[in-house]
Image 1 (cartoon, rainbow, N blue to C red):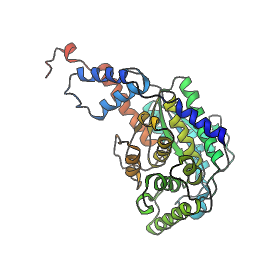
Image 2: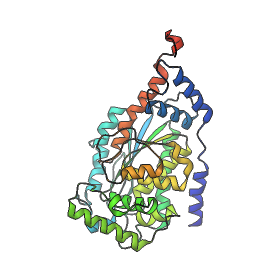
Image 3: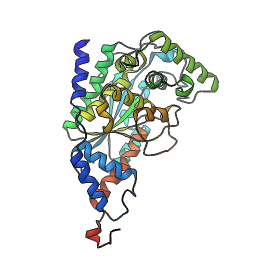
Length: 353
């Protein structure tokens, strides 16, 4: 266990501060363009952040990928989802065949979809599937730890390694995606444990459960918290006892993106649970994150505020898969195009205020 924990510590130590010189150069470029300073708001902030992340004033952000981590959850035994657990492997095959919402949106954004089986409770085989199964789903967190500390760390390593391989091949921007029926339940538990919220504040409707099942879901989360006694000062303990394999995988994606000086666009509630754990494990990774959208899932706003992130867009979405993050890719493209194509006051002969 000590060696594996040291491995996570070593990953965290690879994450460097943003490049302030590149950010100053990007800001100088933005301020020279034919517009009032700061008038493009979050587009300008994203352009400056991308410069700091990559160390280049005008980086090429055209190579983008959404990494969809997939895993099942033992807590589904408690009836917390409107959909049966069998949907997880079925949807993984849908991703791989290109038929899911994230596939459609990724094609439109010119991004790759990379699907990783880190913990699906089924035997899956497909030429495009990255199979890195740690175990066949988590245990029921309402009755004991969802997984061991070693399994959580191994899943983090899966996400890190996938990013490392893609970054080596030229990918500069990553988005977090996930698939796992029942995964809003562990995400809410993580938010309560690390963010200090109550079940009433953190537990939402997920796939669309009714009022009665929502109350039941809150009680299940309360039971999981009581049974496991996760230590909020130890994010790995919280992740192992209350999390999911795909959530742990996304922690690795976020840490890996930061370690490889790549921007990571965070999707909705489940992805933000991973972002919260990653931020607690390695605070230096937070400046590498860009929050894509505000999910309708209860607790997401508080999750982002706890991390210190502000969403770019508000679309009333709650699908997951990485859909909101992929939509935000268009805004990154817009920011990059502004930097490269917009005239300066000098080049356009426009008087500067």
